[in-house]
Image 1 (tube, helix red, strand yellow):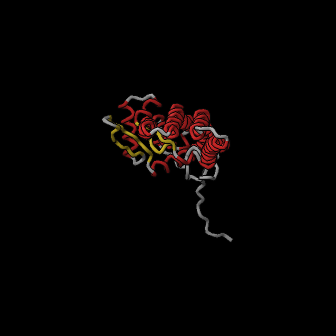
Image 2 (image 1 turned 120 degrees about the horizontal axis):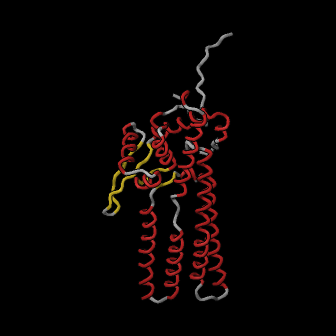
Image 3 (image 1 turned 30 degrees about the horizontal axis):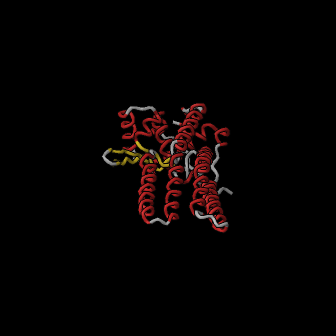
Length: 161
Length: 119
């Protein structure tokens, strides 16, 4: 059969494969609202705890738990395809690890720094800083991961062996 | 000095080139390419991405399922039925062989699409 397929047709088929792979990679991001929702829940939770008011704590704890579950569930249920982990590879894992590291350092740095300065709500401020990293950095991370996955898919259209 | 010669099966990017007529049909090629990149994909995602009707996609998926290339899963999300498809191990090997065959046909230009060894 291969003798009947011309190079131009084979090239078109390979282009089609790459194009479809890019569509899958582009269609499976974590939406921007996820980062904002997570940041909002974190700050609300911490502020409630730091208020030291039992009534407020009794409200924010279930709000945080239910809100987080609903947020994660919303992303999972709306997901229409799952890209193979292979396409993330080491560069993707490093990008995620770097993002987490920055979020932790910013949050802890802000929190402990303000605690040392005598600020009354250091954990809330620390989580607000982390939330800002999530809101700004989350979509950037997703863009980076999509690029990594698209590049790996283009290099290896048949996937892992 | 004539030693026994063994046939050499050339590989392209680690896969033995094997042109697959079932996969090469345009619509099925698109479906398999989508599924090859994913662990699974929702029926509606494939349908919308490729601009197919429900019946056309069902027909193509059935053909791929009969060949053992695709696995179909049906479930529910809440009260809504949800159908997803994934490429089987056999289907992934067939796809890899088909891509290798296409790359061999294209020749040196196609060979620029080289995978890295990290997998």
